[in-house]
Image (cartoon, rainbow, N blue to C red):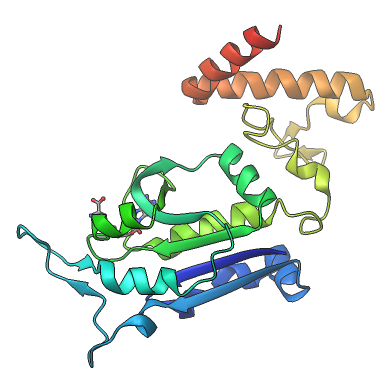
Length: 233
Ligand code: SAH
């Protein structure tokens, strides 16, 4: 079973939104497991201190290597990747999510304050993962993002497995536009090709729209898509 172990000073933030909807039903059904562990359980002082002032001075606090190391070392060494949510990390992609979802699960460390003592990151060989080029106040919401993206790819979690293979990023393109009833909304009809019943034409229209949107909105993805296409052709 796919297992997420989250190390955090706010365990009550979990499962949070992951306890609802399809992810929540799958959690209740035992298709995956989530364990949020309180880092403060690994402190040794009366005040349960997890942070201290930064060496060299400056604002804020830094999470202590010794406490975090105890929290990590208390976990069984079961080969799951150990991730640190961090704005300095490798940006999370659908490809990385798909690989993580195929494995046994993840151990996720959530930073707070100014971040984590560098010796812990190196000493425990943590993979730094970012959810985007902006700064959150803590790693918990980033961990929820990562787990949500993985869990929906676990077989049996989503209604239709196919919806995982045809969506944005799965083939390097953004998804084509979607429509549903009513056939006319505020005078705008659903594109005719989608109501004509010709599956080949629908597929061709969707591909062309996906390419148009990707080229217009994400030049970075478009360039990579073209390079991969050249290699395939
Ligand atoms: N001083 C740090 C930011 C700390 S934000 C810096 O400038 O890089 C506090 C914590 O929030 C981080 O340790 C990390 O765990 C989490 N966090 C913030 N932004 C994030 C992002 N974009 N992706 C993943 N985690 C993030």
